[in-house]
Length: 108
Image (tube, rainbow, N blue to C red; front, side, top):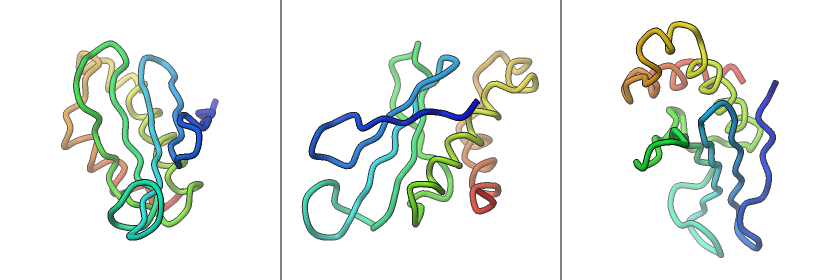
């Protein structure tokens, strides 16, 4: 089942979803105007819900469309909840997680 994103902050382009112990956030940035400043596009990130640590940016961010960012989040969730990831004690390395989506996100 795909993640269901909802607008997390009124009047800002921030969407959030969580499932299976992981939180995902998509933000929209632009060089000018209201909201987040920076490279234009949709930035996707994730973090475990049960740990107090910073979010990990998903490889390929920023994405051109919201659908691409959403697809990258779903790919990452699939990886994080796979049997292989669970065998590695449930916590994939940051570099492995970045590389996975960085390669596959363009296929979304």
